[in-house]
Length: 103
Image (cartoon, rainbow, N blue to C red; front, side, top):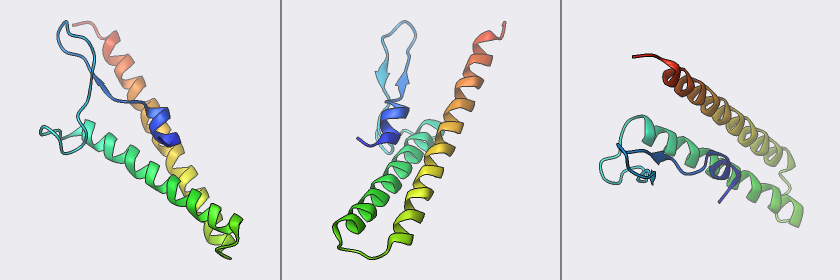
């Protein structure tokens, strides 16, 4: 898998007293809401990174002369990945705050 999916890892869902199990892919078993939005975001960032890699490979091999387009695609994929990491960090921080709450 690409860099985005390696960094985000597979989503895990904990049941009451049960072992962690992977979240279903978007569109499977009625998955909707926040979890499917995150899965879609990871897949989108991964697709952008793969497209940028393909453009850079085409320029490297001489199949394309669009160096500027390849560099722009690479920078866009990098920014998308950085934004995804920021969202992940914010979610992790929010989960930590929820864990600290006393009910």
